[in-house]
Length: 360
Image (cartoon, rainbow, N blue to C red; front, side):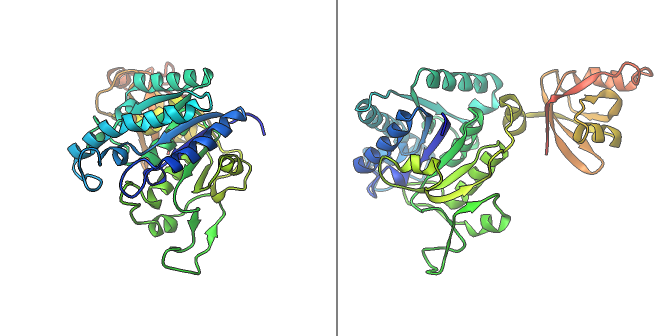
């Protein structure tokens, strides 16, 4: 097995005890497994929950706070405690962890998105172990990821990981709820996730976590769309992550070999960019854009809505609905002038280059 780039996501319940404190035995087990993976020469990134869960007891809360200010205060206390533990544990293996705190705006802002990508790659090139968490102490509700499952999927896509490993308290996906149905059978492999599975996965996680199995399936769907295979399950011991990589993990493998990857810039267009307008095209342009691998030219545009500038992202529609999103090479004013020009078919203006286009 050659060198791989692996993102490992560990949830709050896998790091803390029922009282909300960091569980040293659990933490040590994870660190041993991560150190073992790095020792084999792999690039490893850790998406770690646990800041709020680790901090709320120090603030005097009897359980995980439910108010935004309570969560943010707990994260402010707990993030430092969590990183202190990681530094102490990883130092025993001569590994330096590097803290990265992200919010939704770090993905939606193009420059910060590029900077996050560059920082993570530089840390990996320097043999560091990035420890990534949502910046809970400053994020507002509308700018949060909801849970670190989604964050781990987005990070996996951003750095073009070979695999996303989501560690949880349940050893994979089942065809029924194993907590209430003794006949429930584990699903060892899945190519894709069905709507039926999403509906069956409703339910909360533990009292120290934010996500249940549904959030993990949503994250897996996101990772798959970015070309990243996923493992959801559990394990113990220093070899648990290596066992997962070789196919003998205690859980469910989702995806298949040879998934199509998406460039970092096209990921930003598809999932993080803000839409500045709409472009409506004819059937000929649709054929060229969707099936012939061509760029969109002004000759195929039938109408424009909104005001946009070169570099903005717009949605593209045809008579039968939304086709996709793309980064425009011209402004809405320039496009309108080109559409009105009698010479547009001879001197058609480039609207969206095929390398800056994502179809839905």
